[in-house]
Image (cartoon, rainbow, N blue to C red):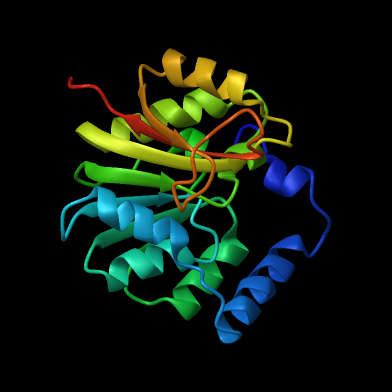
Length: 197
């Protein structure tokens, strides 16, 4: 990987292991971890092909797989992919950097980019990642991304990168539960459309 993602450069040693433990505990405690998957499931037809980009330990992709979709999850962190394979058999989990994503797969119907993935990319690679994702999603398909707005990647910069990647903003919400987006929002969930090619 040419530029190391901020996931590695701006977190402490052991962060990946902590992240895995955190979500295992939340799942064991019965926390609702399926909000992103519910939204994606509502946007796509049954049995759709889903790319879980920056899948982490697999919670979103696993829920979409359980709902009958074909899921490929990718993440640059080997620790997280190992946890996804251990905790959620079924989807295809792969170690891959989103800036170099080149899957030998049929086009996906949707790519989901949850869990603040965009703010953990290497600075300056965001448009490249959007272009890579777009190349893996069929014409007319969607890319759905959610990230906190109090981090190092401003929404205005994201919108410029979206336009630069040739994608179209279809909808924007303040939460994965579709709360309306407004000036006071501290989180953005954006639904992008891949134009017809």
